[in-house]
Structure formats: C-alpha cells, structure tokens
Length: 142
Image (cartoon, rainbow, N blue to C red):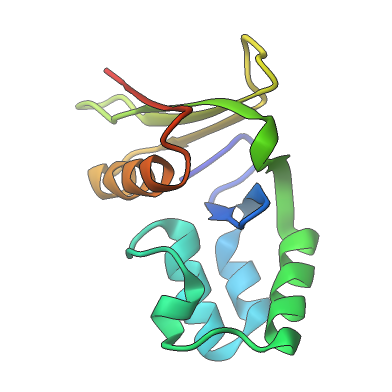
C-alpha cells in the first residue's frame, strides 16, 4: 500500500481509532520479536483475523501494549477516532489501475485519508477487515 510521501504503508485498527502508518517495516523493527511479526502481518492486511492476540496465541502484556502504542504514535501518518468515521470506501484494483481506500470523517465530501494499493489480496483483506469492524459505514466501489 502507499500514500503520498511513503513507499510502504499500513493501516492499524484499535478499539478506539484507525491509524495509518508510513514505513510499516520500520515500525515492526521498533516493536521487535514475535510481536513485530504478528503486528506487521495485521497492519499489512495479509492475514486474518486481525487481532494481534490471535497471531501470538496470547494477549499482549501491559508493557507490550504500551510499547506497541508508543511506536504507533511515533510512526503514525494519521489517526481517526472510530466514532468520527462516516464513510469508508474501497475500490478494487483493475488491470493497470490502483485500488483505493478512502476514509471520510464527520460527513465531509472529500477525504484526506486516501491509500492506494495494487494487489488483489490487499483488497480482499482490507474488505474483510473493514466489513467486519465498520459494517454500517463501509461500501465497496467498482
């Protein structure tokens, strides 16, 4: 995935917000160990379900959670509170065209949170992730 000014990009969903991060591989290195592998897979959307605890086979300790959140804060490009999201649109990549994820906030007609991607598997994982966590505001486009 990519966004202007980044080569790599990730989307992370918590119980309170959606966070976009640039260079997810650097984020993973900073988090370290098994958590990095679990988190980077979830951020990139290559594995389901998206809870880190399912990948690790356990819940994170308080220290691990605090470290993870601190690294997210350092690497974030944007964050949106869940309750402020009014629409999430996902467009599938087609032939030479890129796919597109757009997050609309508080009824705005445009978005500052647009992410592009080229692979069908990223589209499918994003679709499943947002359909699961935001069914009332999620829509797919052709």
